Image (cartoon, rainbow, N blue to C red; front, side):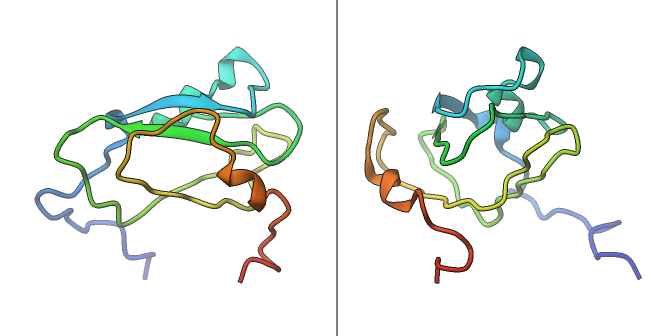
Length: 115
């Protein structure tokens, strides 16, 4: 048996909504223009940040009706030399604002000390 995804129908009203997000800000730069942060919102897009850690990506959802997010898929690419290891996701009903410092308290968090 496969992983269960093949041949399954997606129920009405459920689908990929990456086209309804826009990038507000990103602190990780890009390895090159070919691997820009906008690629994370494309189905087969590849983003490679500059070397470093503790990058923040701020997205805005463009639909006044809102959405229910049940799954967040993050895929690493073999094209990148330093794939994502850990991530913390915040969701807010308010409009995103650049420059918020709340994420800095999580800069040293790893999967071992997260829970």
